[in-house]
Length: 283
Length: 250
Image (cartoon, rainbow over all chains, first blue to last red; front, side, top):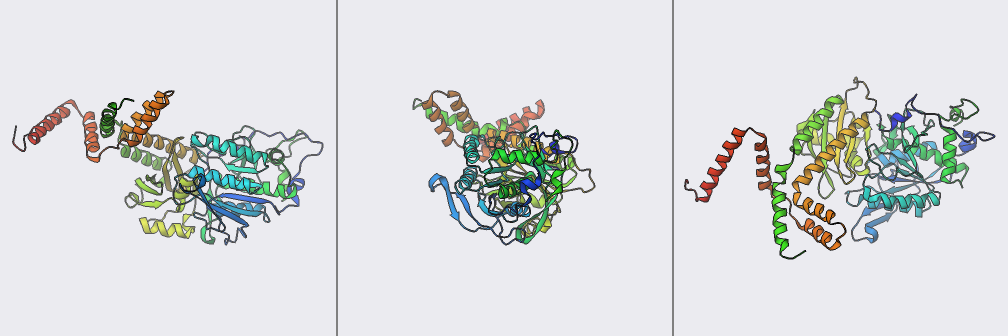
């Protein structure tokens, strides 16, 4: 069982990615070696996070957003703790935590009891994350509605200029989906890896990164874990790594972080010779 | 738009709405049944089911199912803020879970509703670029079946077909609104006319159930042979004459 777009990351299909020919190559040690993601603010825009799940640990804060036709901008925000409705937000938080154990996790709940106004609520969640100076935002959800093209485009540009890294799971529908479609986000599909540190860079986007998301064990509701598959579990792997990189290098821009990730991707083939698995040398 | 045209247009819309189902190429339910049973075969799954969002966008209702537990599943309603189907339709992302029984709440709720707890679920949103419609689910793909190289993508294609079919069939059943929206879009530059037609589209009725059903019956007759059609026409004429004559034979 493989999610769509994953075929691009199958062995033998993925073309080599060419990193910058720097005098001394970027290494995992330099990129994130000493970091546990301490102090990096990471938002999970999803179904909520179960802070009591042992794989999650503390949740630093968050907001639950609901569609409300009487509220300003038709979205009502409730600050503070909330439960995870489905388990999915907890799964994403757990994956991020496993890679960046000291990151500050924030839950931005945008899913709820009805789907009316869903796109507006989702956009409001992203707006909240930018306004509250999140550094990494995991978005394992998307909308295919063309009506939202401009709304998300504007938000994604704002995030880019504010150095907010948006990590987006790509969808598998035939048309474009937002915000994973835009060039400045970190778009992610599942690759075949089981090693959480093994990720790929796709030199022929729109999908730029491949990360584990096929049949992996993730935290779920009520302290449980399940084995699940989906691009939505691949995105938090990249979000976790980005948090670790920012823990070590707090002021990077999105394009600098992408450069680092490309250099450390499993299919990176520096001009100096095959050295593809350097990322495995150091955790 | 001249005022006197409005009542006439409203009558046209009402008629179009009532007769729309007769014009639909195939019954929606038949189409969805064929999609779910084909998907179940292709993916070697124990069951395949399809749920659609209600108008308030708060509940998913299972309309068709094929395979294990199918009878119990059809008609089941689940809120959109619970479970795997709820997450999929809320997030717009497909997901596969290999061991759903380990989600204690999900397992209990499903068992209670259907008496059948699957081991695995693959759920995919049904959506077009215009709207979100529901979710299609495959339960218990056979473990010994060769793992499809692009299972999710293939099911995505099925989901795309199903979504377009549902959307098309809804156009037929709300033909009155669709008419005004189409003419309104064509009016383009003339904002007054376009907004007048928009307003009419909002006010125009959906089909009345009885007449829509009758229209659907006629649609099926249209697919029957010439002799059957002639016989049916005679019967209907006789009935009308009988009804028109206050119960007395013509």
